[in-house]
Length: 304
Image 1 (cartoon, helix red, strand yellow):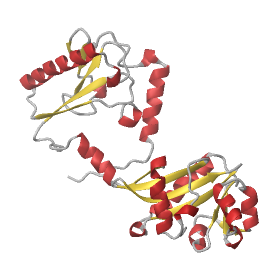
Image 2 (cartoon, rainbow, N blue to C red; image 1 turned 120 degrees about the horizontal axis):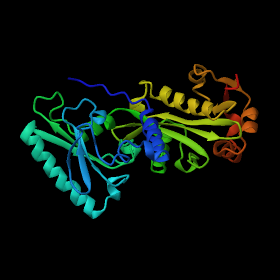
Image 3 (cartoon, rainbow, N blue to C red; image 1 turned 45 degrees about the vertical axis):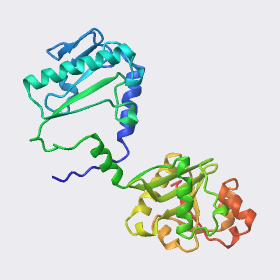
């Protein structure tokens, strides 16, 4: 069986919204507000924890359940020493019960922590998922899933630690021939990187002005060019510019004008660009070093 995973960037937003909703309305939190689990869901408990096979959270996994503290508590890092001991003690009872009833061949046991870690309910719960050799996913563990995601090409916002890789890409693609002259920065700017197997293979940036932005540093590693990565990066940056309510996006390009024309850019005087974005790092660098007036400027009108 071959599985295809599509991450469109919306999952984390949903997780964060659900998490915030439960924090804002604790009376609606399905785990923190129930003194006990009724309707046959409560299977085991001790003084501090309960174990449930609540069908609302099983996601189709047979006999999947969780151990949750009776005290409202956001994450595993917030458990008291006593609650940790009680959780482990109940986990031993859960295993004994599962082995006497459904006889699994293995288990997946773990906590998700905060929305970025996959949690959407701010009440600590330890997932206990029995596994069988006959499962289609037999042999697949949590790290297998995370590795599959890591091996897939994905786009994300750049971090300060990504700047050396961004500078390398700018040099590799000939946008600059001197690392000391590269002005790419995250201060007052937004950057995105394309990552494959933990390696940055593409980047793009927006330098933000008043009502307009400067698109810059659109780079894809030579061995990764021709795969649509540059287009995805450009679409990401332009979507953010539209979301910010920008009236226009500008860029410098003397050699790739035909490419940017396909994205709707038209050539404009350099003086228009520099007047629209006088405080951006690239314009200031161009003015200071004298290269700006030999460049070709392009503009995408977003006001229509």
